Image (cartoon, rainbow, N blue to C red; front, side, top):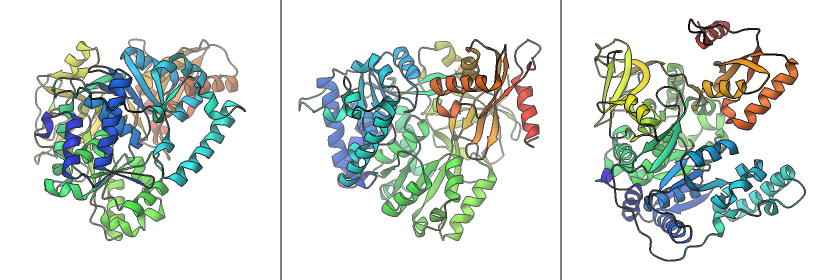
Length: 551
């Protein structure tokens, strides 16, 4: 059974079933299941025999959606090592902190990331391997990209040739297999195979330990959320535009398709025109995305008027709440194009990888999160952990084969999150008489900016570390482009407002991921406080919501 295998073994089985079928499409290049398996095995040879990677070692992957990401992921899994996936735009200080915390042996980072802080990365050059987006491009695109990126990097780093600036670093394409056997790991349901990073069910950043069983559990039930017989899955193609460091993207658009013998269409950076081009070249049938992706696609005439929309089977929306308006507008666009495709909302969180309840063709109710997937059990409970009546609001909890092993080196946090086998999500909602689940609001303090989890407390702590700042409170405001964005209120000791804004933004851009950087900064003499003397961010949020007409 798929669930009781390593992820590598599950992919290998798929490659045996359909060796010559398209596994990956990337910028015009087509890679078959057989060819991809060969590359995975060669990379496992390099990792094992050249680099000494062994079972239990932690390897960072911080790359966009390129073939090398998938190759590394399965090669690491073959050896029983652990893939530690982080955002490719994570600043150096956070990359190093994550590597130190998780005792990472090596990190595979892409060239443009290192180019931004190349001198700082020299500190850990012996643990870093550099990947290039261009390596899997068709020849003409590779030549153009190489020249273009060399020019950009050279402009950024000075007059010396860009490659010279990377002396001391090792490129992955320079590593060659030794053609020696490797020790393939056996399946172990309790082995941590993947580390992902999230806000936890409390809104504080955590590292989440996930097993092969959990990933394969989601993948095995692909026939359920696709509402198709299992044997028909191999006829489909999934657009992979969500990032690999996100459980939704990694599992739903890479692993689940590949182990079910259907194709993954890789788009490294979302742009509507890139999606249209991929659609024209591959006629992909499925999309998984966050609301902002679908909003932007609806604004692209070449998408909504595309004759290839007739090939779309279904689209899924997660990572953030989807408005009924978006669902209705997207489905209307499909009707107009003569497509039977529908946009379905689902629900999950990184502690359980991805979708665990979802709307499908077989069971759908507008405005809901859908029904529990097979072998998953959802409940709505009160503060005493007792199940409430249908229609009553409480905390959403669920039991599923996809639930994490626990938080990394945090037994207390794990114990508070998983109780009697049920994952307590920290989200509020209700279940109706037909078993459909409806989301109401988050208990945890986390903001989704263009589908990316942003932690206001992290923004506040960083800004308050600036000597001139006394207090800071971060909230979310509506944003046309991102749906949500971060605004901060700051109490400063003394300052020139323009200079202070510049210093705050410079600090945030240096140490935070770009979605966490505030788009608005407002200075005040004081901030509202709770009865316990803490900054009352809820009062500030309510004030701002009223200003924007949201209350």
